Length: 238
Ligand SMILES: NC(=O)c1ccc[n+]([C@@H]2O[C@H](COP(=O)([O-])OP(=O)(O)OC[C@H]3O[C@@H](n4cnc5c(N)ncnc54)[C@H](OP(=O)(O)O)[C@@H]3O)[C@@H](O)[C@H]2O)c1
Image (cartoon, rainbow, N blue to C red; front, side, top):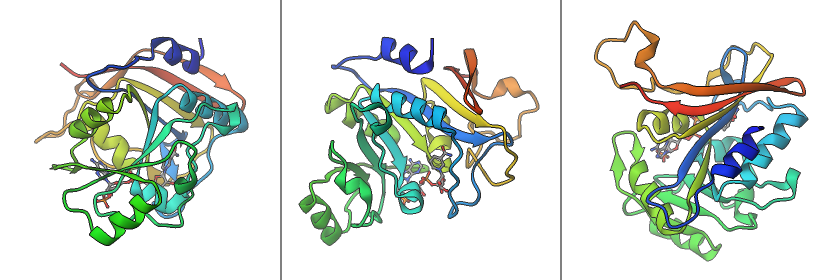
């Protein structure tokens, strides 16, 4: 079963304590997700782009970090499969979100998760454009993701697709807030920006055994067009 059908069949319905989280991104063979942080790279082939839009269509919401908005100006719709579109959510502590961003025209609206006491004028301008602002406490590495998932569950968002970038992917993993991973791998060698901005577990001395790190359990893979897609549930180290 392709990942889209698999996740569709397991998709939780409201009410939920927290959304089911699917981490998904595209990387080159060497694990790059961009050339540099400020130089995005279109990695997926038409078939895996379509699969990504299919995945978006089976999630209630889709999340990216503010740097991805500033670099890629994404639309985050499921237009290649005709919808339904997930609600976009952006992590943006200081409201750096540009008023020219294409996400402001998203058909499902826009949620921006921000920090305590966001800049008032910018907050007003965003609310005037129909944006829902969710104020969150700060955690060790940015906004408190556990508080975010509780807030999303209260909005009946019970499945969340996390698309990046590198800081966001690493933080969700480090906080053990990932249930599924769907990874597109393209057969290119880029030597660019690594997919994960930091180690996925905290440690004082670097582990020497790879089993100390989270892994995919019961994973499977398939070839789609030029690319490979690997997916499975996340297994956390004991
Ligand atoms: N290949 C792919 O599939 C793919 C997908 C998406 C993005 N990308 C690429 O990834 C790059 C951007 O990645 P990035 O690592 O620079 O930035 P990012 O992950 O998009 O955004 C990180 C920013 O989000 C904010 N944030 C707030 N709370 C956070 C939390 N709890 N955890 C993590 N971030 C939090 C922080 O900014 P504040 O402190 O200002 O809030 C942080 O610097 C771009 O080059 C883009 O093209 C690739």
